[in-house]
Image 1 (cartoon, rainbow, N blue to C red):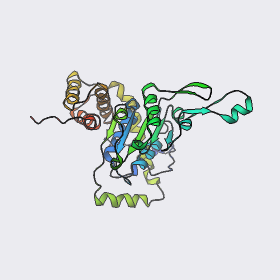
Image 2: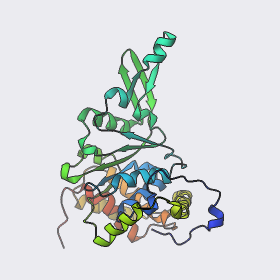
Image 3: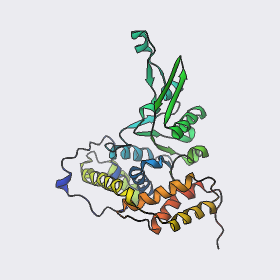
Image 4: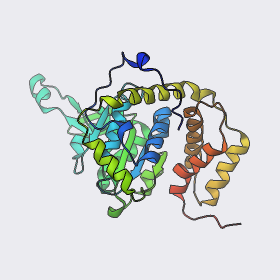
Length: 301
């Protein structure tokens, strides 16, 4: 991921980025997941990132740090968290009892899905989310709308959201229906080397994250530049054919994965400041989109 053309400190001084959690740029040992989230920031139409990693690997901190990093960008304006055991009323919304009693007419209270409209929805341990809540989430991802038909209410609310989800592979994997609807899937992270573990502890001991202020601003500007470039990035027919052949070789049904892979390749090129997709971008798209969805592995030639 290109970081060579950082803005100068003087050009960054007027930008305010307060930190309430470990800064995105300060996290170590999560390079692939960080790269995936940067791609999502460049093209939110990828729909989200699902990250598989064991307990204590920093996956939740990474998601919250990312939300802080992109908080001022369109389609990433705010973060809404969905707890395990969430009730249907809290997820979808329902009758606002206080307002209803005060006015004598029914008032709707927005749920978590509707509140995430135009922003990010974070679900930790999404593989443990109950089936009913997951089905509501799937419907919302498909339509961008939350429908509520309960307590005498008939309500349709926009919920065009970007999903940030995590899971611990030791506790099972998310349903395939969910994986099909989210563009990027970061496979379970490998064991962290001792040096990286030590650096993680050192950075966690820092109470002042001001040292990461400039790096955070530089990353955000890099995302903004890539977003501007993205519509001009070109992918050739030959490259599209290569992605389609790879999807078939991995036994992937339907073309949703092909579309996501194309978007990842384009976003990767834009993030590197290029106006054309290169082989490395295709390889990244295969790794983040196609390989996690594979139902079989291609036979070696």
